[in-house]
Structure formats: structure tokens, C-alpha cells
Length: 84
View 1: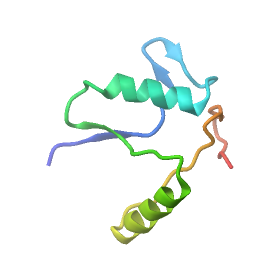
View 2: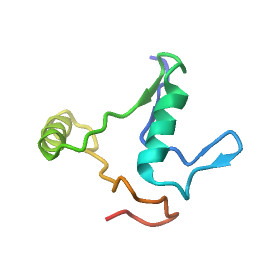
View 3: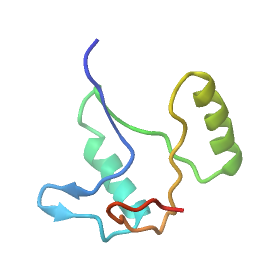
View 4: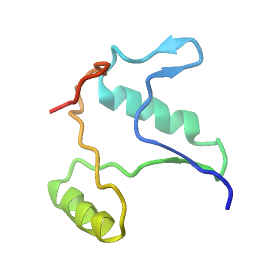
């Protein structure tokens, strides 16, 4: 089985530091950056719909996966901190 790269956030790209930018901007840049990267590069699914997030959590947990990541859309990246 080949390795796969799965990303949910972007902290830097080339020489640009994205940690001071909101998550929604980091996420959009990540999606654009990996759009043509090839079949072993993936961006996790994302939603702002609570019902969809709950359904994903229920499905993923039952499949033995770790769960979901929830981040505020306007949140900045804070090293060594959890977003709440």
C-alpha cells in the first residue's frame, strides 16, 4: 500500500508563513496547493453544517478512525495551544 498525505491545515507554503492568517484562508490555500498534487495527496473533508459534522463523527468513530477536528473559521494558528 503506498503512503498517503492527508492534511487539514496549512502553516507554511514555500517561503510564506500562514500562521497569522485565519483558518478559513489557510484552508483555502491548502486546497488550492494540493488540487493538482496527485492521487496520494488529500485534504480532509470540511463543513460548517453541524448536522453533517455530527454524521461524520458518528460514521468515522464507528469505522475506527480518530474522529473530527473542529476549528473556528477566523481562528489563527497558536503554537502549543488548542482551539476551543
